[in-house]
Amino acid sequence: MILECKEKNGQMVMPVFYHVNPSDVKKQTRSFKDAFTKHEKNFKKMPETIQRWRAALIEASNLSGWDSMVIKTYHPQSDCEGLVGIDSRIYRIKSLLCIQLLDVKIVGIWRMGGIGKTTISGVVFNQFSSQFDGCCFIANIREESDKCGLVHIRNQLLSQILEEEEDLTLGTPIIPEYIKKRLQYRKVFIVLDDVSDIEQIEFLIGRIDRLGPGSRVIATTRDKQVLCNYGVENIYELEGFEYHEALQLFSGYAFKQKCPSQNFWELSNKVVDYAKGNPLALKVLGSSLYRKSVHDWQSVLHKLKSISNPKIHNVLKISYDGLDHEEQDIFLDIACFFKGENSKRVTKILDSCYFSTHVGLTALIEKSLVTISYNKLDMHDLIQEMGWEIIRKESFKELGKRSRLWNHDDVFHVLKNNMGTDAVQGLKYLPNELRYLYWHGYPLKTLPSNFSPINLIELQLPYSNVDVQLWVDNKHGSDV
Image 1 (cartoon, one colour):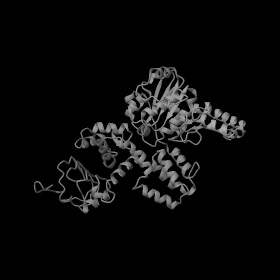
Image 2 (cartoon, rainbow, N blue to C red):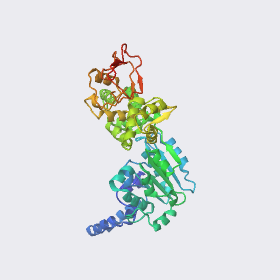
Image 3 (cartoon, helix red, strand yellow):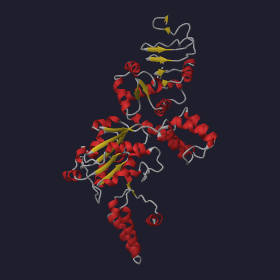
Image 4 (cartoon, helix red, strand yellow):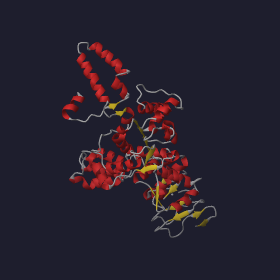
């Protein structure tokens, strides 16, 4: 019936091969063979129907489609209709792929979570896969490798690009020589989506020159170092949406049209400004606000000032979870205290706290959590909010048990009520392990009497009310 609609009405058909090899559909082998054996017994008087079913499956298997590893992540389209801002990004990736050349090339797509790496690579795969002998899109490798292991994923990959009638079951890390020789003669197109470790690329495709002339590989990642370690020279740093693109994408989800409704223009602009060009945030917030009242919109925007949306937070936090303990601490310090500050001065301060601030900063930059521009530390607002949310979860109710306090009102509340504990490592930084303290407009005339920061490196209290003393030096019994 689907194919009849295609023929009569010209409707586009995109078959999805969910946990089945397309060749089994075409040749009706394995489970399809068993099914047709039963059908022929049950419908002995309807041989023409059985034959029509067989013919329909053969025709469907010859159409360009998608396998189960692909549809786990997103819904691909055969063209760019409905995908905002796609053309310029496709052009950039196409120029890096140089598909017309006969060399073998790998291209990386790198940036923060939710920026659209999977969607972009999927559209490119869909547009150009027909030009190759074999193709395979493996989605969400980071998560899938934890669930089913790299051996299983590699067997799926090899089965698809070699067009095996039955799935390969290679149980060893070493690919047999006969498989390697077959690969050398096939022009293939492979997308490795969301790789998080160089071992994943090495295990799945080995050396890039193992593939046949003209082959292309796209690897998407949040960690630029993974690509560099493999020797990827062509890396596309996928940028966020421009304002007009962001507004159009958001409107598509919030209003099912290209621009906001008249009564929601100002509120829509606030949401778009909050998302800072991140497609995931625009989609999540747009969907959550669809058909909601102005009051609901205002409530959501007010809530976002203090609590991150969990869907957005969880996606962004994946990059944070991939850091070691010291890198996580450096990230949280920057998110809470040092965004927009001079990188050299911040490095000097943090060097007194950590073994290697430089190495930690490099890791944060490569994972697209932090940027340095004109010697200033910066990060996406959503990533900063993700850092704040991590701190809030340390203690939702007792501020004095959080490791970092950056909000002036929270700091004032803790100091005024003497609620500080040893958990507090920084107030905008406190107690005795304090390295850096900055508080614009400090409201009290002195700092707490039990404040004795023996490791203090820098103290800034611009426009404060301190007029008698900073604190009492308990060690020497004198005023400071």
